[in-house]
Amino acid sequence: MNVVVSGMVAGDPGQGGAAWAILQYVLGLRRLGHDVTLVEPVDGLTPDRVSVFRRIVARFDLRAALVADDRSAGLTLREVDDTCRSADLHLNVSGMWRGGLDVPVRVYLDLDPAFNQLWADVEGIDVGLDGHTHHATVGQHVGAVGCEVPTCGRTWIRTLPPVVLEHWPYAATRARHSFTTIGNWRSYGSIEHGGRVYGQRAHSLRRLAGIASSSTHSFEVALAIHADEHEDLALLRRHGWRLVDPAFAASTPSAYRAFIRSSYAELSVAKSGYVESRCGWVSDRSVCYLASGRPVVALDTGLRDVLPVGEGLLVYTDEAEAVAAVDDVCARYDEHRTAARGLAEEHFDSDLVLTRLLDEVGAR
Image (tube, rainbow, N blue to C red):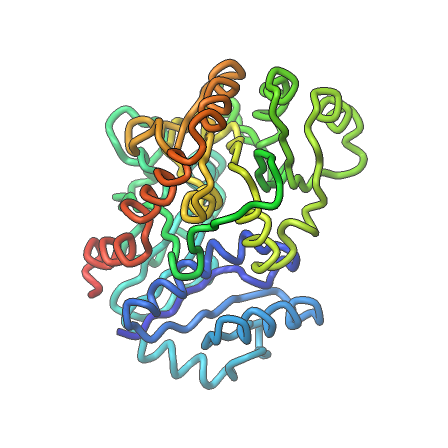
């Protein structure tokens, strides 16, 4: 089958984790034997974008194009056009390629559940939902009874984020005895609806800053936060969080993978919008920790209802639960490491996840 994947790997240079979120689909579909082409639309072929794009294409031997209006890097525009004409499936991450392709199966893949739906339904923002034959989301409760996330009149296929296990093997050693994570302090504007605020990681971390000072263990966060956020930076440092330069931890796919694999475990702090909406968001970053045999302690977005928790993956709702989960990971570390890899193999293996998704959209 000929597959076109649209997603960002180079449009925002320095985002190794965001690139991996797309690469899991590209490499995973290729593993299943499909002919996969990555097409990333951008608003300009800047030198840094082209440089990042070429490095990633070379590293993973991708068939790919970076496209801006009447110019491209990688494949030529004619080659892109020919590829799209023969495609059987278009996997369009966050509706990135506007206008869509005239192919039999066109899947909108939502990696930002609750936000995309609220932007579209409440604020009337065009997030690119139209023009697709199917809509899929990593929000495991979107469209389910009791979930207040609007469906925008669509039927949502719930799919887990995949991990290509051959690229994320079990890590036998570690370089730091720290619970780590990677993320942005702010990503975009928050949303207010029905008297509730769907906010960013900043809102979650402010509420949970005391985790580090209440625990005897070490916490490092590779946090993209502006230097002018003086009060928030002081809050984090006062409670004992060690701030790591995100350029060190996540500037490239290789740096991102190395940082995760050299960590002791992850303490994941989800955006407050995921928590408030109870959308069942599953982090593609946390899945990489699990695959590496790194236990994950995750702020609960509704995960208790969709995944086995307590071994390898532990969830919390407040500081006390987080500290208890961290202590448990440290007390039974080898057990949790084994369980973490087991969860990745049983639930997130790209072979399984992507085969199910293709079955759901009738594209095998």
